[in-house]
Each structure stands twice: as C-alpha cells, then as structure tokens.
Image (cartoon, rainbow over all chains, first blue to last red; front, side, top):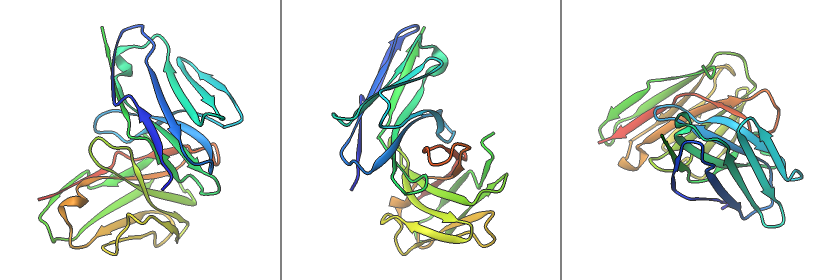
Length: 113
Length: 115
C-alpha cells in the first residue's frame, strides 16, 4: 500500500517560532504533494501544494521544501501565531487518480504565547 | 464555507444498525469523493464519483458499505450492520479550482459513533 510517513506526531513552539513538519513517501506514483490544515470539528482545508519538479514553494508564511531524490518534503511555518494551532497533514496525490490523496498521520501543532 | 454540506453532523447508533450519510455540494462538480478519518489519523480514501458513475472503491469499503450519486449532484454513503470499528468521521469532498493538484474542498464531516 502506498504510504506517506509524517513526523513529529505533535509539536509545541513559541509564538514567532518556525515549526517544521516532515514527510516521506515510498512510492513514485505521486504527482502532487499538498498540505492540509484541520481545526477541531472541521474538515481539512488546503494550505499549499507543490509539484515534485519544484524544490521550494512559498505562500505567505507557509513554505514547502521538496527533495525528490530523498522522497521527502517538509512544511515550514514562519512567524507562527497561536491561530496556527491545528493539525497539519501532508498528502500525496496519486498520478492519474483524479484527486485521490494518500494522507500522512498528522501533526498536532500548538503555538504558545 | 467549503461549499460542501454534510448531514447528519453526528450520528450515534447501536452495533448492527444501518446508517446513511448525505453529502450536498453547493455548486456542480463532476467529481465527488468520500474519505474516512479515525481519531488521530489522516483521512483515508474510500471512493469517488465522476457524475453518477462510481469510478473507484478502496479496499476499505467492505460489502457493508455502499455509496451512490443518483443524479450526479448529491451523494449518499450507507453503512449496513454497523460495527464498532466503523466509528469515524466520514468526509465528503469536491475538487478545487486547480485541476489535478490534490486540492479538495472537504465538508465538515459526519461523525459516526457505534456503541
């Protein structure tokens, strides 16, 4: 089964810090790598996504770094705020599978004042 | 507002009962997806529709599960003879504006608790 492994499981940072969440995939049959943010009681919401031929993508305070040879990618949140406290999921889109996604297990982020 | 409405938001049932969840996309989309999310895990793909046609079903979708999209608009997910292991959040999603980028708009989900 295609898998996406995510770490850490939980993370606590101070306001203004830069939390980093890491993911690794095992199968090359993926062609897009989105990150989702989920608040309690809500469905996941897309944050940012990257193609495997791009090494870095920034949108606002969120940055994805992608290492194709290592099959690893990570999310950095610059100048983190308490409102960023949520669960973050990396995901991988199956090539040719519409928007069929394989998700990581999630990272629960808490940003403290 | 993600444009996807799901009902009921929470369902508590006894083991062995049947339950049905409904998903209503606000705007028309050719594709519609169902995912399941258990506590502390990421969403897992269950099935998806292209208009009325169910194009793919995950191995997670046992014979007790059936999904339909009769008119290519709303969709239903029925679970027969529920088991405690079916307790989860059932999420419906439609594609985002950026085609084939992994962008999905998820509803707020229907949480199932099987006692």
